[in-house]
Length: 112
Length: 112
Image 1 (cartoon, one colour):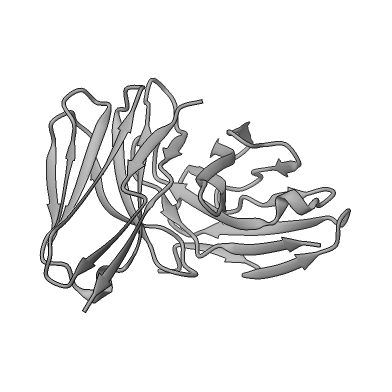
Image 2: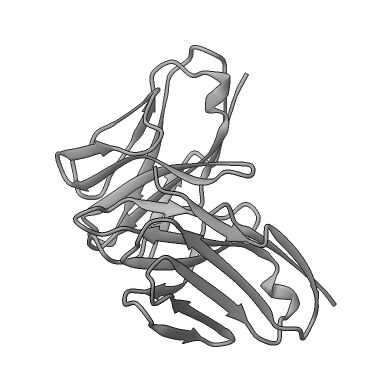
C-alpha cells in the first residue's frame, strides 16, 4: 500500500514564487491535513479537510491555500513564498475524526 | 491555542535501559497519540489511547492515558539502538474537533 504520498520531496523557491505541494492518499480516508515542522516547534496544523469540498484553517494558515476536490488529493498552495515558509511540510490522513493520523514522508521546502 | 508540554526534551541512555517520557496539558484531551519520527521521515504512530486510564502496550512500548485526561506517558523497556529518534505526543480535544496538538518532541539517543 502506498499510504500517503507527498511530492516533491525537496524544493527550493525564490521569494515571491508560487508552488503547490501535492498530497495523495489511497486509503479512502475522509480526513486530511497539512502540518509544518520547524526546529524546536513540533508539528503545527496549517489546514485540514473533513471531506471532499470541505476545508478549514488550522493553527498557522496564513500564506497557504488548500482545496479538496477529491477524496484522494489535498494540495497545499503557496501563492507568494516567503523565507518564513522555509520548513518541512507533512500531509496526513485519517479514517475519521477520532482515529490516528497517517503521515507522508514530508516535503522539505527552502525559500531564499 | 492548546499546548502540550513534553519532557524531557532530550535524553541519552545506555542500551538496555528503560526510558520514560511524558506529556502534560492544561486542557482536557479525548485522544492521546504517540509517534516516532526517524530522520528524513514522517511521524509513525506507535500507540493510540482513547479512554482515560487506558494502558496500552506495543511490544516494548507502553503508554497510558492519564485519568485526569490532561497527561500521558510513554515507556520504552530494554532500549535498543533502533529506538533512536524523536518521539512526539499528540492530543485531540474531541468535542467535534479533528485538530491534533503536538508536543515539541523528545529526542532519544541510545548509547550501545
